[in-house]
Image 1 (cartoon, one colour):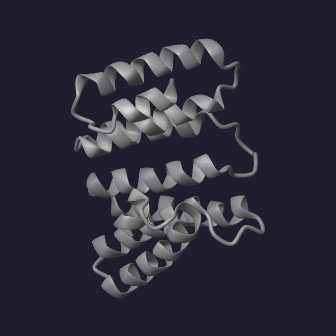
Image 2: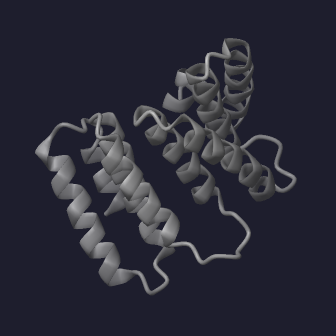
Length: 169
């Protein structure tokens, strides 16, 4: 169901996106046993849709809901890194630069922990991309460009040249 929602939300402004997201949430809620960390994927997609629709407060709320699904005290997972990077982006759009910086830094730290011995990961690339946006918002363009260059390497190696995140970096 999540895959269908992802396809339906290729154009975030269609009613089929909202319907597919709601359907995925209902079906996964019924199929996934507690603690339902897999539901974080639905929340993450809903947050991405909200951000694309210029609804950063709603995006932040969905990311927070997704992060709350993970048990505390556990090693970070790749999805948590992606969520923290997304949270930083939502906070930037809300003008909350200090909070965005904190979450981008947490995403970078967690990306390193989650990657283990893997050299290139999507999470690390997304965290660097978010950090670049934070640095840009702070007026530090040199640090922003550096973060984006590093992000591009991470994303190109982990996702490929044509991936949307790679192109954004």
